[in-house]
Structures are given as structure tokens and as C-alpha cells.
View (spheres, rainbow, N blue to C red):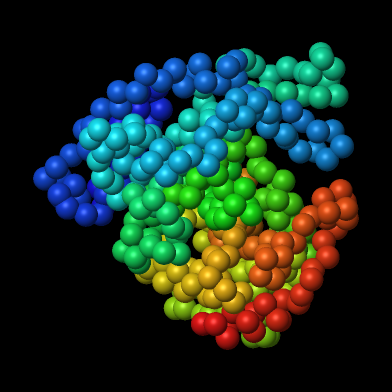
Length: 372
């Protein structure tokens, strides 16, 4: 694989990860110029996004009003993630072809270009605020106009995994970044506005609430038992066996005992690993195999031709804290509880974060084994 970094017309970085010739050997190089008349990346931020502290929950809330202007369901011939072909629509990717590409989001939730400094809303110390620093990136899995990670050839999926690991390591080394989250959304039901096969990476300037909560639970578990919570959960699931979906040499896929979504699967490594960069080549190969297997099962979960809408996330250890407690794992879940029927997060779930499942984890796992 060959990595090439370039700059877009507005100053954003774009990175090509090539796994095919003539680029992988260096016989050809990525040198197309982005000539679009774009405003600078700093100008798009319109004074800078910020995060504000919610004293009721202890959470940071990002305020990014410039994102209201982002691209929404464009015509097929104006796909901003497609290659730029001669005489065609000028896209985010200046090259006429590509394998895997990563670039800074044009409408970022977090960006190193935010100006300003820490202060208080209305000058009141009750509400601290600071620039929404960090970085937001788009990961294009393929130049194909439609699809998702599950439709990739294993070799291409491995390249995407290498890009994820590369970006995790690089973003985690940037000043002010506290957590790197890799994810893919699929389906309009999830809110996807571009059908092009892609995902995103958020480099947070804080540890987001779910990661912080898992870290705290892991800390309490160690204080109470001396064990690693993530490892103990995996070992308990493997002992029970009733919710196991599939097992590889280095990874196990299972439905968690307290699954909250209509369809939910976790993938955990057999070794204590904090993040993607720490995986060995053999572990990366096995992750690609088992992940593609699970995604295929999810597409067959409900009868009918419609692909399953889902959110897939890579949960990694925070950059600076709790790395001895946290354990890398992937989570894939769907809001589709039955064909044509979505699980809406209404009163108790949205207002009180108290979850009610419409099925059982054992039924989910049984169905996923059945369609394997």
C-alpha cells in the first residue's frame, strides 16, 4: 500500500491510500490539482465552531452552525465523493480514479482551524465554552457510486482498515485530541445523505460520553475484581455460547447480553488491544474476514431486498487516559426492528436514556447464526 498526502483547493488535506498499480509501486503518482474556486477552509467555519459544557450532565456539546449548509442528497451526477473525470462535475477528489481516500470534511464538527479561546457563555462560569478543536475526516472506501463496507473485496477492506489505523495513530498524536472514533453510517433511516460508500473519523477534543462511561465502569470493575471488564465480558460470552455469532482465530462476534438495539453485534479481539494501530497483521486479516462475514449476515437478517440500515463504530481507548483499562472492540447496530418498521427513540429512551428492547439478545444471535 502507498500513502500520498495532497492539498485541496481550500487548504484541506487529502490522503490517498493506494493498493493497485501503477500507484502502489510508485510507477505513477497522485498529482491532480484541485482547481475549484472554493472559499478557504477557515472562511467556511464562519468564526469557528465551539463546544459548550452542560452542567446538568457533565457533557460537552458541539455547536457547528456551518454544517447546516452541507451537501444533502445530491443528484447522481454530482456525487462529491466520486473521482473527478475530464469534463465532469468537479468533486472533492481531483484524481480521475482512486482506491481509498481520506480527506478533511468540508463542513467539520471539529477542526484545528477554529479561532478564539476558552471563555464562558454570557460571561457566566456556569457554562464554560472553548473552540471545537480536533479534526473531522471522510473516508471513501471505493470510487463506486453506491455501496458500503460490507460490499468491499477483502483486499480493499484491508486497505480501509490500514487507513483507519494510520489515521488513528496520526490524529491521536495531534495536540488537543483526546479520542479518535471511526464509524460508518448506512441508510437514509440513519440520516445518511450521500449513498457513496464511505465512513468518517472524528478526532474529539474531549473523551465523548459513552467512551467516558465505559472507562469509568471498567475502572470500577478493576477496583472491585482486579480484572479487565472488556476481557471478562468476552470470556463470559464465550463460556455461555448462546449469543455467539461466529468465532475466528483472533476475534469473536457476539450479541451482548444486554443488547439495547433491535439488531446489535459486538466484535472483540482475543488479545488485550487498546486500538487499531496495536493490531498485528494476523489480527487485521482476521478482523477483515469476520467483519465482512458479520455484515453479510446483517444484510440477510430481515427478509426482503432492502439493505439493513446500520451504524458501525470502532471503540478505541482514549488517547491519553485509561489505555490500560479500555479494550478495542467494534459495534454494529440497526434501528430496523422488522421489515419496514423502525425503532423510534421516543419518551423514555430519548428523554430519560432508559432503554426498552423489542426482542432478546438470544433471538438476535440465533437469527444471525441461521443466516450465516
